[in-house]
Image 1: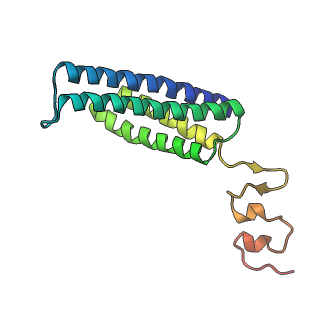
Image 2 (image 1 turned 180 degrees about the vertical axis):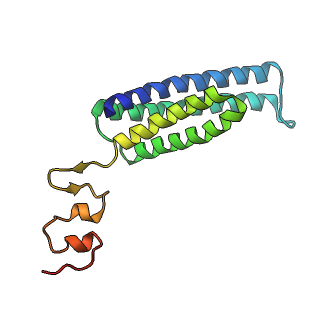
Image 3 (image 1 turned 90 degrees about the vertical axis):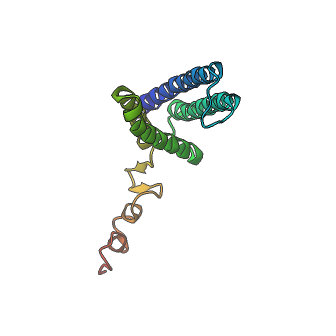
Length: 165
């Protein structure tokens, strides 16, 4: 189930990247054509800044989409940088989702929460894995899971104090 989720997440992020670039292109064109400024800022600077913001935002979304796509294609968890990038993308979608309710409306909020849910689901699906056959985890679980059940320190590792021999 985790492969399709990661692939859908990648496709949605690619689509969102195109949308962000197009929205910023329209905003930059309008600002340039109407010679608009904000508090006396140069209109050319406004237009250039909007183009740059759209390009950088689109590239970051494409990067996160590639990370999710590679995770889905390889069926392996992304590395440390990949996880941090996806977490940052999820946080940004959460914050922007809260802002879009008042500025754009509930449909934009629902879309942002859908993308947030896909990112979180992808991160959770490719989380630390535990090998159930021998009770050993990759180091992310509690100490009791890493200690063999029959060892004298099993009770101490589980927080039960010293055990009698």
